[in-house]
Image 1 (cartoon, rainbow, N blue to C red):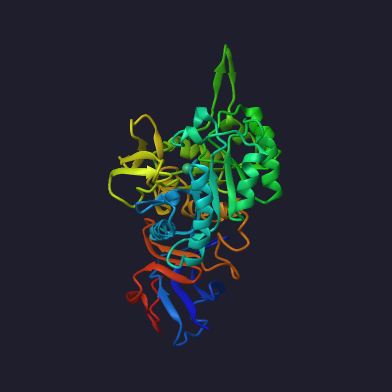
Image 2 (tube, rainbow, N blue to C red; image 1 turned 120 degrees about the vertical axis):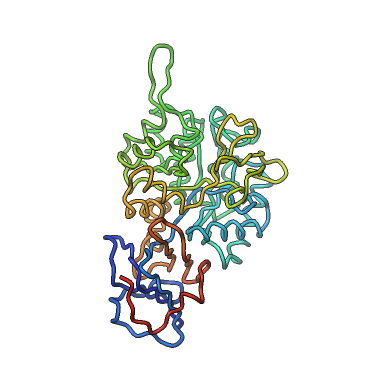
Length: 409
Ligand SMILES: [Zn+2]
């Protein structure tokens, strides 16, 4: 049995950060956590010396459209593999490919492409299911989503989608639309995460939704109602409702641009690390130079311009998605929101895993879980990314230190 041993690191475990432990992986899983010097290294072991860097659970990005010049709606296996690899180089070990609102044909084709890509993905972040961001959204809050494909959720529209793919793990829906509450019940029955987003809901709509399967807020604050006025009276919106519902999870685009520092701090303080997942919502331009990129299908997607480190609509009237990678999100939560490194990592690993219902196998360093690991320095620059026990990014030969006893810590 070929083992992968990661030694000499600061392990980020569920109960704290610990030195003096080595992580032992085999067959894609974490099989042991041992005191240094209490194990033997065998000839066929692969050994990474972390040189005192952090050894962390891999980051899980539950909302991402693309990167490396591709969008998940490009319609090709190559797009999926390129995006999964690009994000893995920045610490993402699990990814929920997100399909923007698109035509019926593009959507159903993507189900097929996803299945093929999943079986061929050896060098990228693990594909953990599809997120459909639309078409059941509010026209008033469509943002960069193509309004011409937006519709109300009726069983005639959504049942064929649910029947065509077993890979859908998440749906973003505006809960105030007619039919959205029944749709939430249907998703809950199937174990699919219903997420409130691109919504003009008032508080009551979200309170109702929370009792019918909705458990997450899609890019909290972005494309989402807050306090509005009807006549002379003030009405609370989706944002306020999400704070009042204790069980409601939120995801936040912590690229440092979509949310200013004060909002990041507010989310961190009042929703807390156990209810807040960091997501990139990255577009195809992530990991690429400034320029014009596509959101959604190559044929009829929306053009987006990348500048100032973010994606904007071509008329610069609104943000259209981020150009971030998960390492940046963790760094921002520490630097801008004042989160501890431990909490920032939890928001990028354990919390998204719990939200997606996969914490039994991902999201923390525990014996028996998938060997999805990232190694990074104090500034969260990624040194190695390991997905299912495979090193998909890292300076491999130089870090093979065998039978060496000089512990850096
Ligand atoms: Zn999105």
